[in-house]
Image (cartoon, one colour):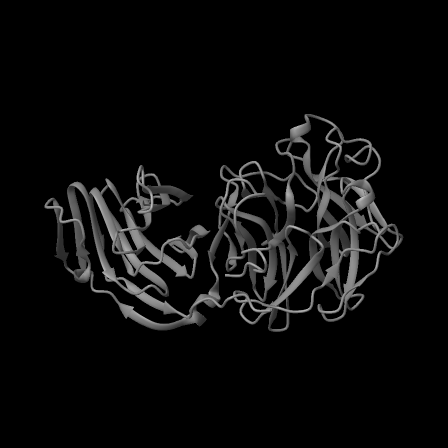
Length: 484
């Protein structure tokens, strides 16, 4: 799991990924100093090795001599170069005013700053908050994303309009690129809801435009849609693309697929917690126009063994006399009339994918357990088939504490579509500290947590009954450590 580990356990900030040939190229900020943009390369888009750093802060007195913030890298076929638009801060201004600059490269490795025309760009005028027009004293004008549409080029930005309630001015700013320079345009999208819309990016799928942005208020990635590039962007009843903790999303094309990368942060504040880079997900458009995520197709390249698990091998762990197990044709029924019971089997503490068919026959509380140790500490995933809700918790104990030594921590919640027969196909991935749950082929949970590493997995029941077909366990090659 890539963290850009150095003096600190993690140093990774906002990210961007582009593919050249068969190689994936990751560019990311380095925290806390923000003094250079790092570069890493991967053969599979999942395991990364650092290479030559891409860009550094400017010399004293330069417009970007303080910090470098979020960037976007794309190929310019007309100019036959790769371009990086990036955010820079100036020491003489205490870093309060964000500007957009540009660098170029022939090979994605050696970069040269090249601020053509009127770059670096800073907002001036009446459309966006700028120096001298922000009540907060600092200016949001960052996170550039280059979009090409109908032979035109545009920069999307995290910006703020110049009026209205201070905490609701966040918008997706728009800059038109011309032969003469860069021209500020009215916002592409101004929802009148958020303080900022960070790391905006855009994709077009089957004639529909999808605008993606990250919102600090709930630490989630949202999306909106429009029939035209500069049309009205609307929200579905649920416009959260990724569950809480996944942040600063960036999309990229990988052949016929559209991938989305984020960093994951294990806190409710984007400025706190531990960050890491999980594997990407693939974006898919549903027939009703909504977006959904599916697992990265390269997971199958990491499978090194397949084992069918006999449900009869799942043994009760709590000796609850109200619990039972019985064959039902090719399936096995597990029930617990009263109280709580675990049925588990030892599979080792490596990385794996678990595929199974799950049917809830009587809805109490029931779900999956994994990475369970001998003290029954581990991860518990509640599956509410009536409400369509998956909820993962860390549950166990802290033996070093005398009082209240239990652990019972909510990690993430995801929603799925209930079906009449309450039968669902589940895929649970455990790859090092990375955890991913798909329900009926759609990713519903995606998080990073490494506190438990026990060898047991199985199910739990509280006043519930479920039926399982024989699960398939696929052993995976483990994730590589960060490489210099």
